[in-house]
Image 1 (cartoon, helix red, strand yellow):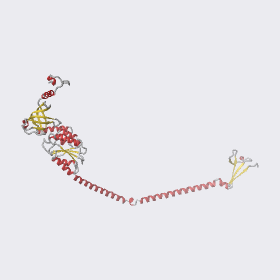
Image 2 (cartoon, one colour; image 1 turned 60 degrees about the vertical axis):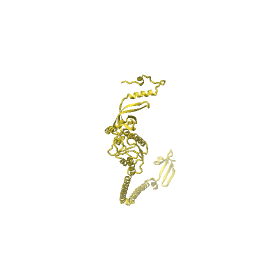
Image 3 (tube, one colour; image 1 turned 180 degrees about the vertical axis):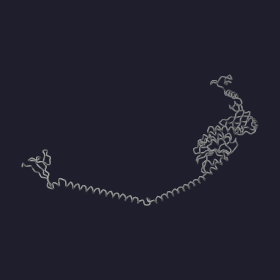
Image 4 (cartoon, helix red, strand yellow; image 1 turned 45 degrees about the vertical axis):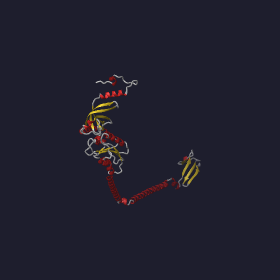
Length: 417
C-alpha cells in the first residue's frame, strides 16, 4: 500500500512563501489524514468525566498511567449509563474509538463507540507481569535495600490529607520519640492524580538534606484503590531515590509492588512509626542497663587490680624493698675490700722483689767494689772519648788518665818511669 502526500492527492501544489495555504486548507488536510486512521482500541485510566444531565455527549479524559500523556474521549451519554458499574476517576478502561480532528478548534479527540472496564483479574495479571519484570531487573534484590538510620534528623511523610494513616504515623512516632521532626506532604493516594502528586512529593523530599527517611503511608483499600502504588513509574522513582524509602501501604494482606521496591516494607502505618524512630523509654532503660553493667564491670576490675596489688605488696621484695639493695650493697663492699686486699698483697710482693733486686744490684754493682778500695782507670782516646784502661800498652807516657774511686774521680798523667 502506497501513500500520497496531501498536495498530490488533492492536485494542489505544495505551498511556498509566495503562495501559502490558508489555515482552513491545512486543517482540512490534517483532518483527512487523521480520519483515514480508522477505529482503534485504546487503553487508559480515567482522570475526568463530564456528563451533564440532558446532554447527548459525554467527555472523558483518558490518561496513560505510565506517561504524562492524555487524550479527550467523546461518547454518547447512553454509553456511560449502560455500563454495569458507574465509571469513576481512576478506573481503567478499554475503548473502541475513532480519531477525530475538529477543524474549527484544531483539536484531536477520540470518538468512542464502545467502552469496556478492565476487570480486577486483568489488573492483577498485569501487576504480576510487572512484578516479574521489576524482579528480573533486580529492583527487589535485598542487597540494594539501604538500612534506615537509627535516629533520623528528619522524616518525610507522603500521605493523604487528614487521613488515619497520617494520624497513626505522627501520633505513634511522637509518642516513641517526641523530638522527631516530620515534613508532611499531603497528596492524592488513589485515582488518576495520585501517581504524579506522589512522585512530585518524592522528588521534593529526596532533595531535602534534612530528610533522612521518606515514608509513603496509606490505609487499606481495594485493588483499584491501591493501584497507584503498583505503578511502574512510581516504583522506578522509589528505586532511584537517594533517601531510604519506607512503604506503609494498606494492611497486612495488601502487597502492592511498592512494598517490594522500598527499602523497608511495613505492614501498617502504625508499624512504620515503630520502625523509623526508636522508643525513648526503651532506649533510656537500655542506657540505664548499660550504665549499670559498666559500673559493675568497673568495680570488678578495680577489685581485681586491688587484690593483685595487695598480693604483690605481700611479697618480700615489695614488703621491704630496701633490703635487697642493702644486701647487694654489702656484697659490693665485700668485693671491693677483697679487691683492695688482693691489690695490696700484689703491691707488697712486688715491692719486696724490687728491694731484693736493689740490694743485689747494690752488692754486685761497681759502686760497692769502688767502696772496697778498687778504682776504675780510664784513658782518653785520640777521638777524645774515654776508654777503660786494661793494658799498660794503652797508656804510653804523657797519656792523660781519669781515675774513678768510691767518692769521686782524680786525673793523672803517665810518666816515663
